[in-house]
Image (cartoon, rainbow, N blue to C red):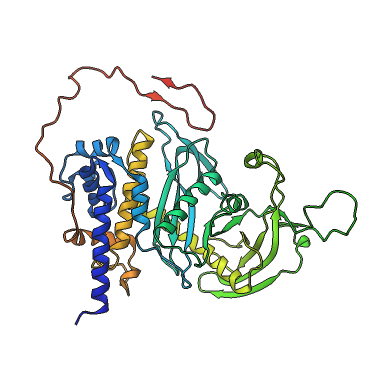
Amino acid sequence: MTSVHDLAAAGAFGELSRFRQEFYDCLSARGDALFELTDALLCAEGPVASLVELSVAAEHRRGHGALYDGVNQGRVDIDRLRDAVARRRIPRCDDGRIVLAVDVSNWLRPDASTSPDRAFCHTYARGKGRTQMIPGWPYSFVAALEPGRTCWTAILDARRLRPDDNHTDLAAAQLRTVVDTLAAAGHWREGDPDIWIVGDSGYDGPRLAFLLDDLPVRLLVRLRSDRVLAFPPPPRRPGAPGRTVRHGPRFAFADPQSWPEPAHATTADTARYGAAHARSWDRLHPKLTRSDAWAPHEGALPILEGTVIRLQVERLPGASAPKPLWLWFSATASTAAQVDRLWQMFLRRFDLEHTFRFLKQTLGWTRPRLRTPAAADRWTWLVIAACAQLRLARHLVEDQRRPWERTATTPARLSPARVRRGFRAVRLTTTAPASPPKPSRPGPGRPAGSRNSHRAPRHNPGKTPRTTATG
């Protein structure tokens, strides 16, 4: 008699095989080389230290020249691959709600003076409160979060931010594409709960809510502790002279005297943070000014009301005195149960940090020293396709546990790195549409003793356009 586990494994195997075929169909040029490069990325022993080392993996049947030719000259249909990733199973909360997280991760390239479109990336330096701005390629990722404590996320999209791009406006366009793709794939239908989008303080939450107002989404973002918002104005008396007042009493995060009685006050006991005290205030909005992104706005500036949540925890790992966390939710009239769920869901956003660490330290996303941004985008989507295959193979691999690691109680508790260890055995039984390599001989290359007379142009990083220098 077939067990439920066998049926689930058979369904996961079929889903993985279909995705591998769809992924291969998205590779419109140098498809065989790019597909085998992704397999080598998935099956290589240990963390990826360099791109060329993947060419000696058994899954990569071509030479290192074909590897670099595929990355630099191949073509990936990104729109089609995004749809293929979105058609897979998407993690949901207990009530069936989809929660998306958006964040930026940097591919630092401080010494790549011949690489264009580099921007100054905000990075943390040694010492408390110290930061550095290092040239590189920042990428904006959108991923679906899983409920509970986990290091898994489902990456749905990635876009490179150019020096002149506005983070919030680009994130709005990216989220619109992702939400439309999820709806087209049947993951969201009319009558389903609104999709929640979680972001950090680098995004302008009210503007994101304004740009995505026509979509079934709600925004939850962190605000700086020095923000000042406003309540609605008091009712206007009939026949009162003067113009209509748009803003009511001020609400300064740093001034407790400006805080009225909260709409809700809850306390929850957590294993990691101790007692978590949450207070919320309803119908708070920022005072917008006609500058920056709002400068070209026609007509009166909108009033964007939402719920403000202040979270204070008893303890925080690595901090002696935890600071409060301020959140803004783009909906009003939130209940006490919803307030608790909102701050807990915001803490799930940090699962995306585990994904970034896995991309960089295990899959070697930022290891290649590629020159062109197009090659970097191509490699990034190969890494995303690899992550999608690992997520589909979670219930198929056998745990190859190290002696110092804990035993996983269920396949779902395996980390992405442990799933990758067993992927080679799964790959042998799945679809492998790549054609075998054809016999060939290397080209003559540059004549011995000759020098390169075509120097690559040099590009200065940053937002200010400068004259391209050569040398």
